Image (tube, rainbow over the protein chains, first blue to last red):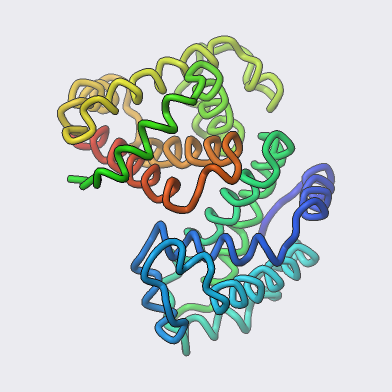
Length: 147
Length: 147
């Protein structure tokens, strides 16, 4: 369970209000596929992933990125029960998609990097610390049903 | 050994020329101490680390951050032999400082986040991929002499 102070929760809500989640998702997922090319193995049906430009412009990457970030946004509204919120997704990623949970940490880190990129100075150390707690919590929640 | 392409080297060195090592160093180390508070244990004699503001404003944090990034900058001149470049520092961190090598990865990641924050869109996915190779190579090199 993620323990966030009232101040941290407020900081996260403010931060999330300043970004366009749709853009963040596609960019984070795209960067995951570029920086850690082995992750492309989960997206065989996505078409052209042959270069950084292809990946970042790929409409399926953007669409899936949006789907992931929408789910993440939902998690932000249930910070006190991330395990419950991500329970079905955890089972799906284990039983059907066979995704190594380390990838959730890598993607969470990509989200942090993309936020830093977009927010610049607004991405203060305190906000970063709060947000990194959240992505760690989400990664753990997604790994929770693994067996 | 990390293999850097000509494109990686060009990307890394061109971005490094634009980095203010003093500022970036202090910010990278400071954020490490804020986001991962247990890392403060290595800096007992640094004085006030009691809050994010205290850490980010702490002159010893800034000075040490500058020292760390200066060392990284020097290693860029020996990018094809990072293990050689960091050999003595590796021994120091193992035998005298007793720093868990995982912290090198955390610090390297923090640098990537700082670069994203500072350079925004200029920190393209390809740039990020090159830099993430770099920090992974440095972390490995620093861990290389551990026993």
